[in-house]
Amino acid sequence: MPWNVIKVDKMLDPNQQFRGGVFHHSIPDGRIGADIRISPSEIIAEPSAEALSVMDPSEIARMPRWVIPLSECQVDLGGASGRMVFCRNKERDLTIFCEERGFAAVLGDRSGGMLSEQLHLVKKRQAGENHRFRFWLTVGAVATLLLGVIGYYSVLAAARLAIAAVPISMDEKIGSMAMQTIEKEQKLAADHPATKFVTEIVDRLKPHAAIPEMNFKVIVIQSSEVNAFALPGGQMVVYTGLLKKAETGEQVAGVLAHEMSHATLRHGLQRVSQSLGIVAAIQFLIGDAGGLLALGSQAAQTSILTSYSRQSETEADLEGARMLHEAGLDPESISAFFDKLKKEDGDIPGVLVWVSSHPLHEQRIESIAKFKSTLAKKEYGPLDLDLDTVRKSLQ
Amino acid sequence: MVSTLNFEITQRPDFSMLKVALEAGQQVFAEPSAMASMSPNLTLKAGLKGGALKSLGRMFGGESMIVNTFTAGNGPGEVVFAPGHIGDTQHYRLTGGSLMLQRGAYMANSAGIEVTGKWQGAKGFFSGEGLVLLKASGNGDLFFNSYGAILEINVSDDYVVDTGYIVAFEDTLQYRVRNLPGLRGGGFKRLFFSGEGLVCQFSGQGRVWVQTRYVSPFLSWVNPFRPTKNN
Image (tube, rainbow over all chains, first blue to last red; front, side):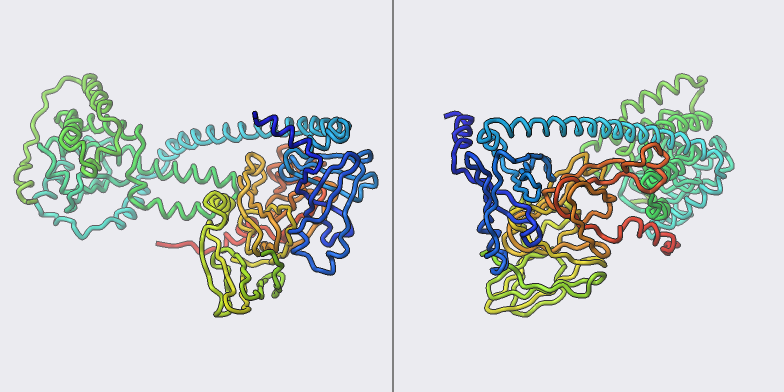
């Protein structure tokens, strides 16, 4: 038998009971759970056994059964779900309500369609109201979303503009703050061959930096991680893992040029101002400034300062390539290093820390090559520094 | 077994505590860490009451998935519960219907009641009440708490409550989120600057419990005095 046939049979069951409730002033608290039946002429509600079981015995004695003749019943829809049917008597001092499925159908059936008509009108009115409500809700939601998107991009743009007005000393302050949070126990001495090696490279690239007066400093930290990063203001950290992995001094120079470019392009400060700006915008909307301060102190953490957007990475690639070119080194040294990493250890997670946060490497190689072709033709000399000695000293 | 709990709410309204005297074999359920003191013969069991789905519903309603069950074993005993924050505790006897509770308002209940989450959708989002409200249904005693004292309001037609002040309302009430009625004209300026943005309008018949303080303005008031960490 199809399910809808069963449903119709059930609807016509004269003894069908529904669970619902009653409002009447005689009830303590004004309301009680009830079992409801619909006879051909009346709606009859009796307190449910469970409802009586939680009542005071003295109150139970006073609980009658409540009856509303169908002929004088007025129906309404409502409740938290919006689907609860309310039946009121003529005096409107007694209400029998029910949320169960099928109640409305049986009610309509028993009243010969009269109450269905009433319910239908109520439904229609409410649907109209809901429609208007939904319309304004949608308008509101779209407007909020639009404001959010516009706000986000304006904040990004404003951050770039604002940074140009901030003095470099601010970068240095933030950079030093972040530097304090870095573990420096494994730092190699200033006269260690590895430190001397990277310092020499930085000194050669320095005159060609976009901000020549920036105070570049580089330290080497003993760690198997293949990574290097620059903090705002020009302080840089190179891990020995990266030096061991590099094949040539030019590759190290490529990485350093890229990192120096992050500092001169002030990407760290951009990151801070963007995340501050976005949070500030959100909190302006919500009206709470508490988290803002927390985020300000958090910004000193290196992870925020050294994870850049794809756009920033590409910018640093091209600026780094320009610096290499000016310094007489092959701009494609940048691509060479991560290409090697990708090819050799692409499957080993953790090895590629320096590359993984960076854009798709085919795109990078391409954009660097393209940029190189726009530069004046030049003979690129080798970097006459001895990487092998450095690597031996790291064994 | 359905039976009423023998209880007493003291220290009202600001530091209210709920004391429940259990007969042998009787149970009471409460949110985690609400217990302040109890007789040694009570046993405590923690678990996902009402199954995984109902528990998830509670979680989305701002409550813990876990509900603690206190059972009086071999004899009568008592247990005292305290809300997590300053405020009153309210008793409500469910007789087959449901009570809708604000996020986090649930505190304890007797046997015969189920507490879960009820999806509110866009209405919940704009009312600031959260996407999911708690819904308690069944037969028995329910206890919920407020921030500040609680006012009980008998709604017989329409009533407007600022969204943050709603603690609970009966399922026979319909609620809509709207712009403050009667103040149209003011337009955007009023909506954004009066501090009275969207409100809940209840209609129908039933009771609403309103708390006398709202956490968020209190936090805004406290915030300027908060010491900031200095590195």
